[in-house]
Amino acid sequence: MWFDRLLQGTLDTFLMVGVSSLIALLLGIPLAVILVTSSKGGIYEAPAINRVLGGFVNLFRSIPFLILMVALIPFTRMIVGTTYGVWAAVVPLTIAATPFFARIAEVSLREVDHGLIEAAQAMGCQRWHIIWHVLLPEARPGIVGGFTITLVTMINSSAMAGAIGAGGLGDIAYRYGYQRFDTQVMLTVIVLLVAVVALV
Image 1 (spheres, rainbow, N blue to C red):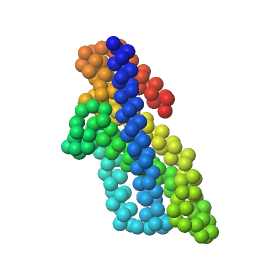
Image 2: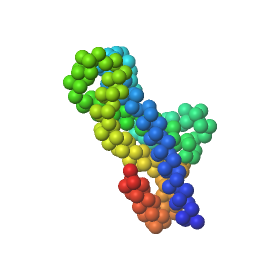
Image 3: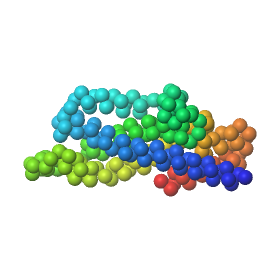
């Protein structure tokens, strides 16, 4: 019985983290590219857009996850039809992960040698070509490292989400470990979470 619950909790955690992190990857990289290219001196300089997007990223990065999750309850209900369970947790996890990863990716993109961009411009490369063949390839190691950090952060956040009804290992730790004072369950969940992080 415990094995089945722990297995289901682990699968739920993988689902929450996997879906939210994948969406954050797909949204975060374009957001980071826009933040870099629209900044002063960028290849698509647009200060107004940069300020709006930068404000959005800073706002959602500054809100603690539990508060964000509660604040997004009406939006979550509108999107998935419920505020409980794995899919309900995917919405706030995604909204938390996207600006977090976008900022890390932005830093990696800004570290690309500007001389490479100038050289590409001097050769007559189009701006999208510079993004696709210069910026992103050069920033790839930093982006991959940033995505790994995002995954670990999302595992931590999914455990917190589980404690307030999202399911997963956090839910098992709270309901059976904390509320029933079952130390064995609590330690097992901790070991599983450490193992999941180690896999990343």
